[in-house]
Length: 402
Image (cartoon, rainbow, N blue to C red):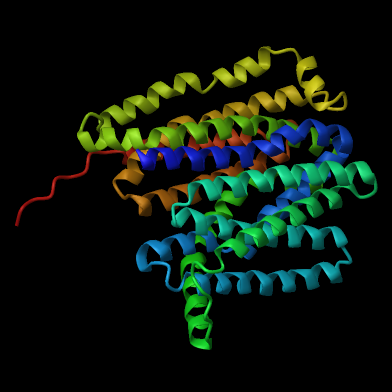
């Protein structure tokens, strides 16, 4: 019962953190305008790219270390991860100084603060402090949003810089408070040898995941870099608004997946669900895939303009296509959860990379046909993975006695 309760607390914290950008969206789309929102979207993409380097899966390394070795050296591991973030942030800040871009520097610092906060969240999660985890997520989301509004109301000059400055200030403030309350949980007694061993662990864990995170970045962010380089920021703003609006479906499906996975695994364990039924369930779920896109297509465009602002004429076609692409995740979750249950991680990783490659190739080809064709790359990339996963969903072979 406690596991279920904690899972719901974690889920609520995650959902709140992810829903805050959506709640802030009508304010930002109006305050920045379509062109400004497009530029913000581009720098958010750079934020996500920098997070791969600066974060380096430190949160995952902390969680795995705790469950394998306990919390004895956890503080030292945390500091080793922070040292990695500080070192590479400094290198990238030198690059931004050469480029003479204050905005890029603030984006990099905001990314570093996000990495620090993620490690503090992982610390709570691995020690099963569900309420602390949720409070940090909620406090960070509220503080960041409020600070964004305050700073943008004070000054209209360089609004994108103020947005990332708000993220930086909120993350650092919450992370420092969180660190203050956990400084006694695992005392930091760093020596040169402990530091080297802790850093070696962080790199041994994070390095193999670079390819995984890079493929995820390609599928989730690369389109905006291509659009920024080849189209106007106004067009990117309309595209990005549709994408962010459609991402609410991804949040809902992610929440449903997290809520149903324990029951899915229980059904597999009891034998009431097997490979054949999982395949049928995935095929049946395809019926629901077009529904969100169809509903968005049927709604009056004036509803979307009321939500986003009058500059965002033309957002509806993009929204429908993104909803269709994101809805393809429904059968994906069903198939991939079966493979996860049976420990087929080595199969899932290359399939994910293949899906990213298909997406990138489709994106490259479709971008030549114009901006309106680019959302189809999301549909193609998400559909391409389904037949392969379907093929590998099979009942495990029985282990023969010697």
